[in-house]
Length: 81
Image 1 (spheres, rainbow, N blue to C red):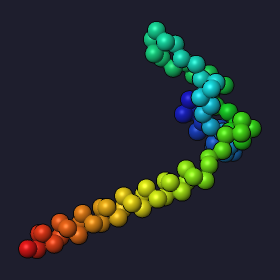
Image 2: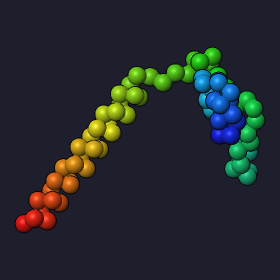
Image 3: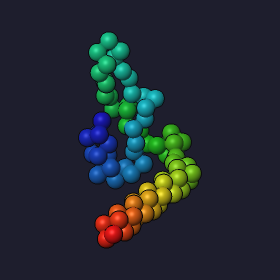
Image 4: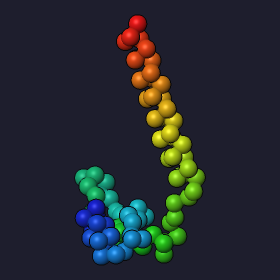
């Protein structure tokens, strides 16, 4: 499915995405059956990324970097002492 998605993106279909509603599973083998219907135009399917997702992602990344920098400062101070 990822190969199909990359193929479509390289062909200029930038709105292509994985449509989880059109992907089917076989329960007895737990094997994913991939068909062409699994990749759809997300804009036509009305699947858009909410702004909240983007802002949350940036906020979490910023908090992570701040935590790493604080830990680094503490390690540097303890290492000098």
